[in-house]
Length: 413
Image 1: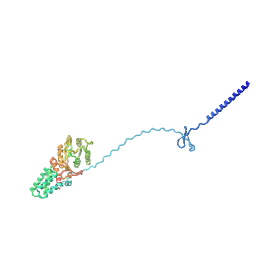
Image 2: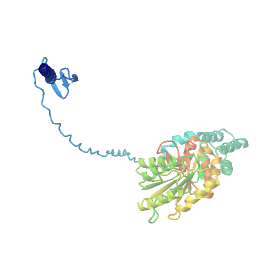
Image 3: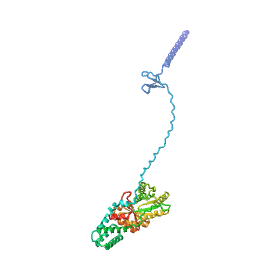
């Protein structure tokens, strides 16, 4: 019995060991099968193009579309350093050359009064015709002489000159007795010419004095045409072959210096001016005289600011300009510009200016626009200086040296 149990025990151990080996073998086979199976392909992602894909880190081409092998990887080229950009400085355009102004050559002014006689005659004909009509109308009684006096006074001849003229005509009539209209016209012409006084020196100081240029200072009231008269005077002197320099000492009116410079450029005459509006007019005048001396000009003409004759401060400033000029040069000519159409008011202006500066002559503008030709006689008598220039129109050459004979001829034409 014991042997039987031992045998059964051995059989049992053997059977159990065999079963254990079988189970181990089965498990090892299953494990080997799982290890040998290929891994599942990863999820494919589309990266670029219709036929190119990327799976993990390996790329492939869909052979259904193309049979070309994939391109070998290329090594990226190094990015070259950018060349520095050189920026050229902006090229400034060259300033346009100023347009050349054609230099004009004015004609001589010596016979200008005669050429413009028709204009003067048309404006002053009222005076001449009125006088001749009265004197040739018949008997010269006291009533006629009174009308003659009224006509002369209306022409701004002045009381003193009117009385002298009427008295002279009365004496001639008394001596000669009855007179023809032609005789009366001749007598009137002679007596008017005496009043205008052809013996007065009407020359313009425009010739060098020693080693310096002549200096002409021009003054006047606002609106009389002062700057224009200076420009026209330059043309008159250029026509006489004078070397002229202009000084723009009117620094208060913005366009005065430009206006004067334009006048000068037309006849090739330089203008000394300040670039700053409101500059000291005395300083500009001083520089103009100095520059004229440096270039050895014949004459320098100083244009001053127009001013009201009843403004004391402005008149004092005018005196200052005169004093500053005289520090280096005498003033050879001081011309007062008056508007002939202002009549008696022009005389009052003249008297105030004569007190501030030494007036040597008068420029009478707009003489062709007034019938009051007697203002010439009145001004000369009151100031003791001659009318030297007269304005007879708007043209550049309508400023003429005053000719007493031509003036009286025009009045009585």
